[in-house]
Image (cartoon, rainbow, N blue to C red; front, side, top):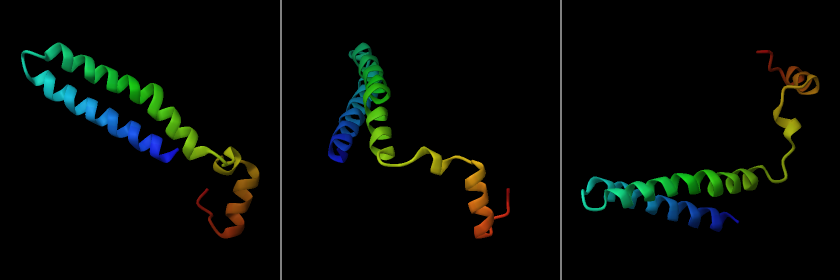
Length: 82
């Protein structure tokens, strides 16, 4: 899965750089703007959900929230900033 994320990120980065380069030329300005738009759209619709799913797979959401049990664990460990 991490290879899919890396390849997709690389393709989106190449499309974004190509779009930026094309947008600075007068002949291909419309193509450059379309490439920039599609790369942003691809990042939002494909890359970010896959990355979030891959990074949060197998983790419990309750471990990262401030519940009463987690606050008690922090106080037992000596973290009294809260």
